[in-house]
Length: 593
Image 1 (cartoon, rainbow, N blue to C red):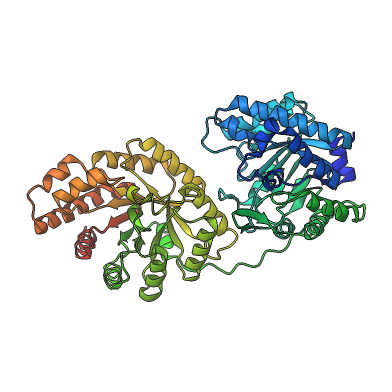
Image 2 (cartoon, helix red, strand yellow):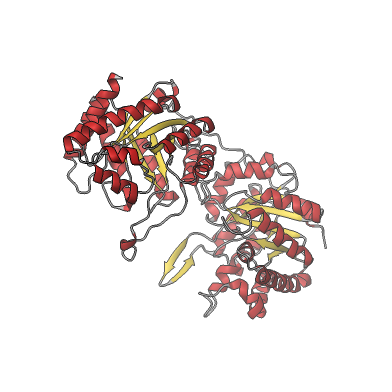
């Protein structure tokens, strides 16, 4: 049998099979069953699918092990070993009579499991090597975490092993974890022990063809480009998910992908043996010459960025004041607009707007940001939560903000829906604030003519502030350039703020919350996450009426503002109970100091 490297270089393109998972799910009675377990319970059915792809003309098949790594990473090592051993036997028995290559199929390992991604991949590799498999496909990856570790492990354990690393990108070039596919491609192509790099899943053949035409394939050197698109895009027919991309269309597009530079091609979700048969015929009709990558398309000239007054002030070393005003809970915006106008006139450099605080629905923070920017000329800083938006919805929202000249965002994970509402309203989280920051930062370099200034939250009241600092450093690595802190109302919070100043590179706006009564202080201390008020401050409010309590709030807020000045680049004032007049008094006191 021809060495895999020789085949790819001299006889390519190497045609893989299609999608075992979706083909298995289409079988009668199999839609709700896990296909990897069929290696153990019904290996003949898996063998029939392998043979169907081989009969269609593919020269490489994947073991039916896409999710085995999940079992391994979550502590079900014995089950993973059984699945892998059975899958290798079935695949090898089918491939050997045809002279086809067998690739160990490693799907993405889960994040936050007992094993790291790299550890999970290496342990899987050992199980495959023990079965005699020497070719590996690390596929549908949302990140390159663990890829280098796997590559080095294979090089050490089996120097002749062949490794393909394949990423799953949407048509805009981002993975589900917010990474740029181009950045992942570049980093992985630079790994000496990786043999091929490419893309699979999520996108259909047209979009992956267009995507690779925009990449600089010369960075691959002697590595191969691998492309395995979906049959198209899914649609729901009744209760079944189906891919309606036709086999002849898929085959023609796969031939174009090969002509554009891919030396390894195949199919992902929705691709049946018929899709692969059409691809085999289309590839056979190509001239027997090495693929010639298309010239990289020139990037359009990006216009000069627009003005971002908040970012410009911070970059110039000038202190700024951002004031938060909660969005209305109904459609009467009069008070909100009047409050913004008043605060802006009084010297607030930015108005921050929460995104459905504590999980309760309020007017959309981004729509309000656009309105006050357009009608009042105030600089808004809308909060964007990860709750209830996927990456598509987030990008669409950011495009709208940028069009309205809103160029600052505070990215937070967001409070979950309160428990009593969970039966009727569900929280949806596709990513956290760090992944969202990474995604927005990637768009800054490719989509937005005026980059967004990305801010994050920093909880200086956290019991384990070391964890908060570690997360903040991750946020900075992912593009966050400034932080708004929770209120500083205790010595512990002040000490944590000092530590943050020593540790972080980004700008810090120190949180100021004017407590307005003894009842308010007790409520905040006991029922609101991220708040911590010292007993000494709480005691000061005992027996105070509204007027006296507000005067005390002004004095305490001004004192705290002075104390945190050496450790901050500005202030983040939070308006309690819509008391704009109280915030005016605090702003006046701050301006006098």
